[in-house]
Length: 69
Image (cartoon, rainbow, N blue to C red):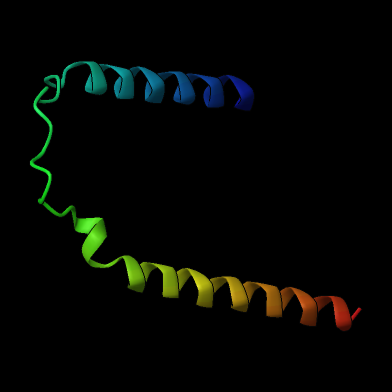
């Protein structure tokens, strides 16, 4: 019975998301002007630094966990 509920919930979520995606208007075919920055360009260094710190912490924790075994 639990599998049927899970499948039904997954089916409903997929149908809801598909109908939401298909109901959106198509994007503007004109490209952005060449000098215009995107939001990712302004904070790219912060994003890279955060990823480097996060990766270092994860690797350090995994090494500590393996060393304690």
